[in-house]
Image (cartoon, rainbow, N blue to C red; front, side, top):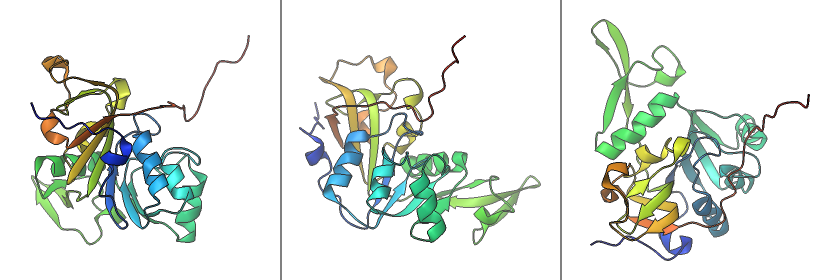
Length: 233
């Protein structure tokens, strides 16, 4: 049985360098690869491009990389909840490529499947389509979108085994699955790492063929972006 386990996050991120492009799973603060992000902060890599649905909050998630000005470009679909993101974008310090959320997911999935590009109606007639090829199908206009190209994909799963098979829990099954195998190297951090053969094959969301390195993460905070509670009666 092929073992893809590495002992820690330091080994998992070997090879990352300045100027690389990274995919990072998660939606808001749900299912983000916290350990991988913390290690990127520690390594101090600069001029990186991050592909992620959003950029965390000011003091957590990708917000930590923004605070250190390690990110040169953000490719995302949502830019709320992060004042530093807004400041850097408006000041011109940060290059931002806004992408419709469905298109962002499909650009990941296309890369995962080995497709170079695909047509989508999303964004036609807007700034999103500027400079891109358009084509009509059955009377409707579509925009040609290229698949993403990334050096590393960092994802976070609930359970995984030594062969790299992954199970995601609840809404943490967001952008994580479609980013697996969508980069040259996929690194998966899991809450629980089990021996190969321990997972029910019928429950596996991503097979190990899409994962190159896997390790058990530590100290997950699981923060809530906007806590909403009922007022006292």
